[in-house]
Image (cartoon, rainbow, N blue to C red; front, side):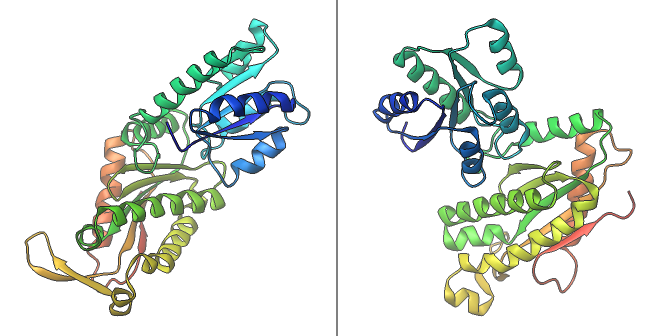
Length: 310
């Protein structure tokens, strides 16, 4: 299972050395930290495949770190295994309630550790709730998140994001380059949502070039504006110099007619689902708004539009 990164957080450097020696034999990349503060700094820019976490450490302890990881939308899906000399049942229960996936008491058998690490990473890789390309929550998880917010009485904005002229780009540049664009969009959405609505955002990938973003109402339009502007600034780099200069590519449309297609753009439909209690209706309303925005005449570049009727 190559190219998987595991971080171990333990104030005893010998534990980190032991874990690294064991897991590196199986092609894992292991990064060791002696404090929770170091781990939190690492998570600001990188996302490991699994966290091994001691409970008792100076600074933020394992309980606090586990809670922080689970509360952050960027990290909440990372599997966590607690490695601890604390064997009391209460400690195990507290760790599991805070979101830990497994609990191993020190001293541990290295074979057991490896087996549990393998199991959790395989489970995460096979998780059908995540889009396999972007690792963002897919349609079932999006629907669950919307229903959870509605049940809690939350008032939020629902943004439906779609890439324009993505199919023609795939036809000309190939699916590998198309996948790079999709991953670029997913990273852009997460980055701007985190910047403008850090405590209240959710990014989901319906599939293909369709995404959903949930966030606070006051932040909705400024986030959409930042997304569209940054996408228009960066997307030309995914084209050849010739196509950038022309501003379009030429290929067959859906009716097999040769057509010029502008450089890709984004269309974002924003609704505030007041009074709408069903996910299907919310998604349909946002999709209709997005379709209307796509058909606006003389459009150039990305656009966002908010439904003023809701």
